[in-house]
Amino acid sequence: MTGVQLRNLAIRYGSVEVLKGINLEIPASEFIVLLGPSGCGKSTLLNAIAGLQDVAEGQILIGEQDMTDVEPKNRGIAMVFQSYALYPRMSVRGNLSFGLKVAKVAKPEIEKRVAHVAKMLQIEPLLDRKPAELSGGQRQRVAIGRAVVRDAGVFLFDEPLSNLDAQLRSDLRVEIKRLHQRLRSTMIYVTHDQIEAMTLADRIVVMKDRIIQQQGTPDEIYNRPANTFVARFVGSPAMNFLDGTISGGDAIVDGQAVPIAAGLSAPLADGRKVIVGVRPEDVTIHADAPGSGLAADIDVVEPMGPEKLVWCKRGEIGLSVKAPSSATVRSGDRVRLGFAEQKLHIFDTETGKRIQ
Image (tube, rainbow, N blue to C red; front, side):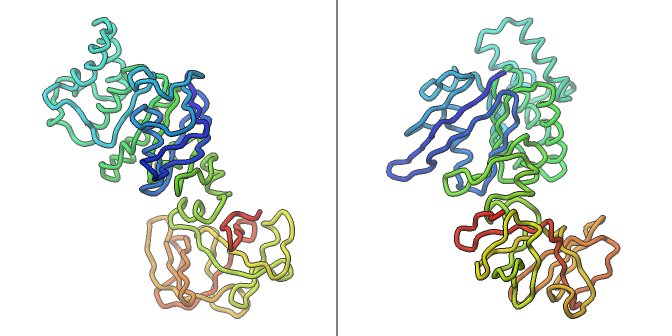
């Protein structure tokens, strides 16, 4: 079992600071996902752990050993890239065994490892095919197998599913989850896809603007986002936001009181500006009746099978609602929106940080 520690890590390109003050401890056997928008530094961080990116400051420890300046081949890691990067003239068997041959592993051991990994990833019938004869999903399985066959202590995944269609991504997410359960190795996975993050991770690290915004379990990230960025980035559709002013324990939104006291650990001072956040599944639609909630007009209704996604407009503000499939709602209807008081999220207007 091998853990990873990042201590006050900084990366610069000349005078441009790409990452700063990154502190992260990844216990052995944890599956951690680095999540964030393009350009936030997550792939750069992964490359630094792999030894493919120079570090300006700080330390990278792998298994308690300082690996900051150690060559990639000596770090005891295996990496799966977004591109399959398979050798086109080699069979699947050849691709799986090539790294072991270079490392001068004994032939019986190579055959044993290749057979084990092929069975684990269900690619046994493909061992004698060339990459050109494989589908995208099969190629990615081979790329993952090439990493797994090395029996490394730490596995790094750099957006390995982004080139696949939706069904294949779903299938391979399950395969990667099973793989982690079998191997119990430390896995660090980079993605901008929140579904991948929520379904795969033991812990999610949300990044933006070169720093870590929040880290926690998927439930913690979703149910207690640290700021408005995390709240907006994690969740589909994104969390709804309304500007309000505290008065008597409620938030006054466009003259309408929204009770928030139940969601707070302590009362807020009257007159304080806040942002009230609410997930689409925590909004209910009522018939238009004065005083029963915030008035809104239904703009678009999207049937999604087990539920309907209802897009509403309140002036210039858009609000999304997840309604039961049985709900009778139509575009153009005037409705009232109610919020689950215990599920509200309150943020400071100036800093965007969570208040509770």
